[in-house]
Length: 231
Ligand SMILES: [Zn+2]
Image (cartoon, rainbow, N blue to C red):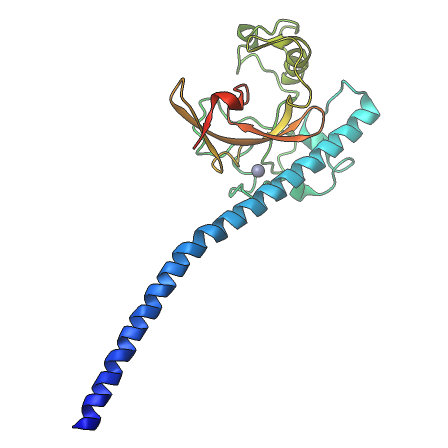
């Protein structure tokens, strides 16, 4: 009898021990998983910024050949002479591997997705602001006070005029270190800002400025960060 009861006692202790171990594992997993996810997201952000640095260097080389106030018509014009690594065209946060174009399918934009290159065999995750396609059908630039451009202007012509002369949101020439020539919208969900004046929530974009530096801004880059609250 003594032996039996001691065995029963030992078995009960093992079960409790198991439950305690499971509980500890659940708590540890709960603590570690968000940290792991954050680490992974930071690695993606760094890789995306490295891609954008490669584009900045390629565009600067292109301008060295064609003139300071010249830009390629398409991002694919850089490949392969100025940018031979096709992986650079893909943001690691872009799960569609370039099939969604410059913007994720779930971003909730009204305008249709626009191609950033003229090579359908080169998938691309990045939006190119100075593209050579006509702008008039998509955006009323004259309504934004941008008038120093010919009729049926291209995005490139509109962007140069906006950068030199400003627009309704920004009278006068833009600062070339904050005027974007390329941006990644696939990173829009990683940081959120609230815009109290319109009660809107917006995400992060990563930009390459005309001067070649990288900067982060809210989804609506025309809004200064001072008017936003980070969530
Ligand atoms: Zn990205």
